[in-house]
Length: 165
Image 1 (cartoon, rainbow, N blue to C red):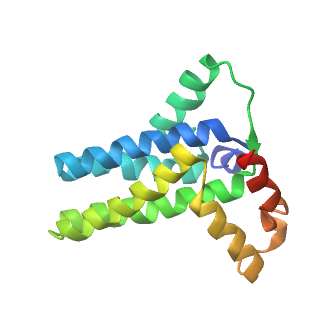
Image 2: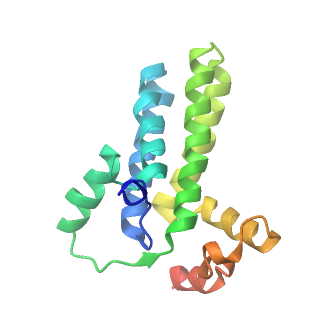
């Protein structure tokens, strides 16, 4: 039961991933405008929750997958889950680091972390380009991540050409 509870979906609906990224863009922009540490708490929690179990414990993930996507008249486009989980893990690193930096009084460094997160989330949300997924593919090619983790991920050229079409 616990392994299922803390599992990540595979495959992932690309529309859901892009809409979650849009929510991350809104949260990141909110921090950059408001500059209050507490704005980083739901951002960081959301990434941790999505890495742990996909949308299951993430308010943003649940809103997107159970509230918004079912109401849209679009066929799902499925993409592999492992690179999306890796991308969420990068989001954890950036958002939690920004929160710690902000709490430690290093506001400028926190702003830089969130600005970089904003760029990556914007690429996913508005262009459909998952920077973390490209990094994941590179790690497979380098042998850092075993190809067996995601066979389709080892060669993303087919997916890139489909998304460009």
